[in-house]
Every structure is written in structure tokens, then in C-alpha cells.
Amino acid sequence: MNEKLKLLIELQSLDSTIISKSSLIKEIPLKMVSAEKPLNEAKANLDKQRQKFEATEKKKRDKERELDDINERINKLKARTSEIKTNKEYQAHLKEIEATEKERYSIEDEILALMEAVEAESKELKAAEAALETEKQKAAALKKELEAEIKQAEKELDDLRAKRAELVNSLDSETYELYMSLLETLNGLAVAEAINEVCQGCNMNIMPQLFVELKRNEDIIQCPQCRRILYYREK
Ligand SMILES: [Zn+2]
Image (cartoon, rainbow, N blue to C red; front, side, top):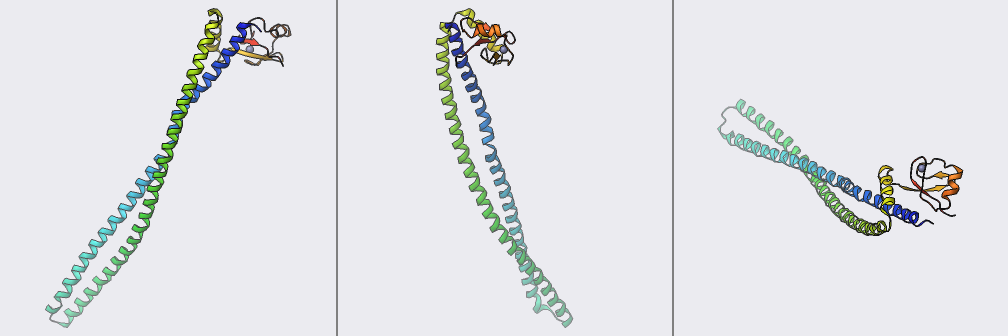
């Protein structure tokens, strides 16, 4: 095989690997962002649970204050009993005490229900805290993994670039310039294999006469359609 052509095939193979590795590295920050999504959801859920819990606790405290007030009212009413002179007044007084006590029972029921709600919501809050902790650990582990992935890929890229530089040194500048201009204009593929009279770069047919010529791999032959440098691999 033509030495230049051999170098060009190797160069293309290196560049294809460099291009795909570089695009993998570029995707990693996006992966990090999407990894943080469940973490942010867990944070939002914890905030929601905390607000719910605090609102119920506040309701309970308000009701307890109401209970204190009503107890005081009942005590005052009861203390006034001895001051009552007539039977009619006394009956009305008893009725008032009874009504106030009824009110107190209903407040006590509400407090009981609120205590149960506080207990249930406190469990939910703890579960949300635990879920957040789990997500934090997961996100941290993934971040570490992705950072190691970047480091590894960058090291591999450095090695590939070093190999590439060596290869380029062995090529004459005219051939390298042709290669580079094709690489830039043809989407990262300057050298293409020809299989069964078809250019694998553009999928167009190659005239039989040209195919016979390029099968020898003796010259730098470009595809008449896409201009890529063609080569033939022996079966
Ligand atoms: Zn072509």
C-alpha cells in the first residue's frame, strides 16, 4: 500500500476516536445536571412536607391556646355560681356552663385529631429527610464517577493527540492540508473505504474503472462525488 495512504487511514482512525471521545466529554456536564434532578425533587418534597408539618403544629398550638381560654372561662363561670341569687338566673348560668363545656369538648376532639396528624406528618417529614439524604449520596457518588470518567477520557485524548502529532510529522504538508480541509468540510470524515464500488463516505457508486485503480491502493484517489480520499481493504 502507498505509504501516504496508510498514514492517512491511521490518521483518520485516530481523528474519529478523538472526535467521539471529545463529544463524550462534552456530554458529561449534561449528565451531571440530569443527575441532580431527583436531588432537587427530594429537596422540594422535603420543603413541602416541612411546611405542612409546621402548619399543622401551629394549628394545634392555636387550638391548645383556645382550650386554655375556654378553661379559664369555665372556671370564671363556676366561680360566679355563689353570687347568683334567683333560680331563673341559676338555670341560665348552668346552661351557659353546659354550652361552654360542649364547646370545650369539640376543641379537645380537634386537638386530638391534630395530634394524630402531627404524628403522621412527622413520620412523613422523617421519610422525606431520609429520601433527600439518599439522593444526596447518590448524586455525590455519580458526580465522583463522572469526574473520574472525564479525567480518564482526557488522559486518553492526550495520548491520542500525542500519537496524532507523531503521525502528522511523517506526512508531507500538502497531503496533510488536503486531509485537514476534507476533515473540516466533510463532517470529520476525510478518508473513506470503498466497498463493492460504493464510497462509504457518501454512498455513491464509483465507476468500475476507478474502482479497479483504487483497489491497488497505490495512489491518493478522491471520490468524484464527495472528494473523500478512498482506499480499499483486502478481504
Ligand atoms: Zn464519496
